[in-house]
Length: 216
Image 1 (cartoon, rainbow, N blue to C red):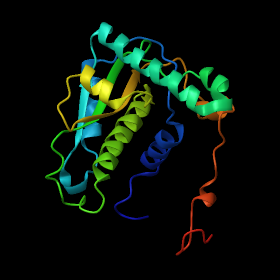
Image 2: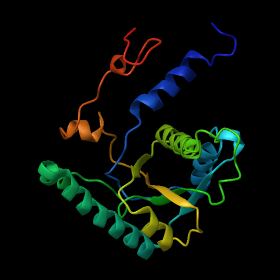
Image 3: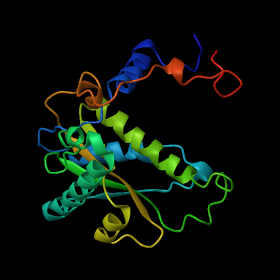
């Protein structure tokens, strides 16, 4: 075995967290202990970032009234999304798309302001700041699953409206409303698969050999 590899048990635990991570919408209330929340955010903060710019910012929403206003923004976009979906609008409106008022913690993950001076790794791919934030969110997600907590990523909102609500400076951008907390159970499969909204495609469909579209 590679001398740098984790033990079999450690590797199994890592792959289990990856395989059992779910985008959760149903929560059981409760709370997340402060030290645990700090540990989870510490995992997020260890994510890779292009040029070590660390563009992520997390806003903890502790005010119940503010949660309600964020949920209202999500509901507004949910209706607009349904309208845009046309013939699938009724089907979409039956889906549960967030757990903002049910979860223990709500975090808003955002891109920092003043990102333009960070050129390293972004000169031709400026969106790498977003990729870096996504890595931080994934770290948080996997750590939460390992701790037995559910997490859901909500992206149904107007970024400008949410940024104004949270007093973000010009150039900063909210990317995700994260619902975090205890759950009764984790979905055995992605919720959208279970509710027949979409089907998962195999890795073989996504893997090419040397040229685009060439299957191995």
